[in-house]
Image (cartoon, rainbow, N blue to C red):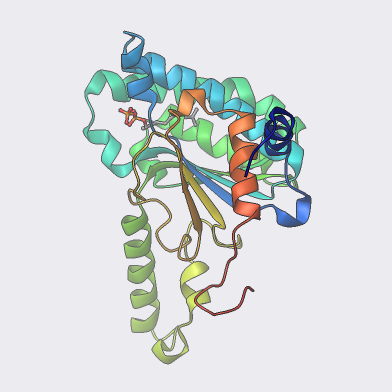
Length: 256
Ligand code: FPP
């Protein structure tokens, strides 16, 4: 089939538009990978990649909020990331703290509700307090539910849930026969939120890396070659169009 220049441009145009609201995922998750390689390509320290990644994150949160996405989860710092060189961990922690300080007003104004996924006790008292107050301050907001995974690991989350259920069963407060999928979902950090519909990972690697293991059970996956700092509203719209075109069967033969 011969494509005219005009039809190619038309195709691009459609891709730069957001799909209609009923075709959007209720819950979108991001593994923001490639900050280090983005920096290396430019001869910069890795921390510069994380700083540039924070700028990209601002644009994506704003866009998700503007187009009416209800739930968004981002993987900002995993339980495994503590094993990185100390100066990189320190730089990341500084960036995250600065982000909360500088963005909280705009997020509150945009009606965004912040939830931290992960164990807060690992953070120094001042930073822990900053994270708690961000959750407190936005807890009644009804717009985008923004989940920020910090010191988060999917296995650790499931393990802690299993321990809680075992404790409740041992105390006679929970009948093991009555345990359902909801018993588990209700004990995760994402309690009350829908499972992930779309998981996007930038940076070219194709794995889940211990992120939202329970919640992504039937998520659509998109792996982007783009490094996170270069991820943009246009790339997001392109990915949302790919998602809108997918047929989700949830193990059945017909679409749901
Ligand atoms: C992975 O890239 C990215 C991270 C471990 C950190 C992600 C953090 C941000 C985007 C900014 C800070 C977050 C907030 C909430 C303000 P990598 O370092 O593994 O990159 P590489 O694979 O190229 O080495």
